[in-house]
Length: 51
Image (cartoon, rainbow, N blue to C red; front, side, top):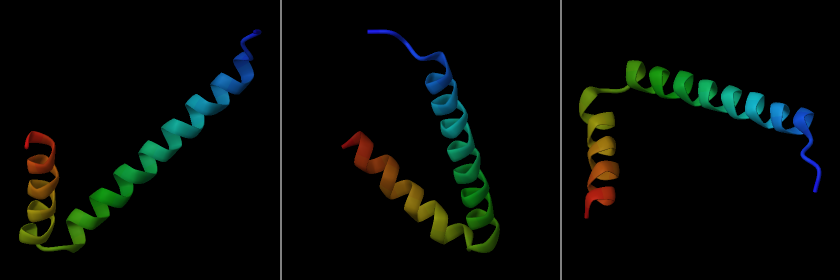
């Protein structure tokens, strides 16, 4: 099986763009919602990973 470097590079770039978009989304969410709202959601996420 031959590795297609161009396809891999496209995937890497797409992944990077997707991560940046999520960071922008989350930063906006944190800015536009009360601390209690987003911190409660983060707490649920963290607790679900620990338990």
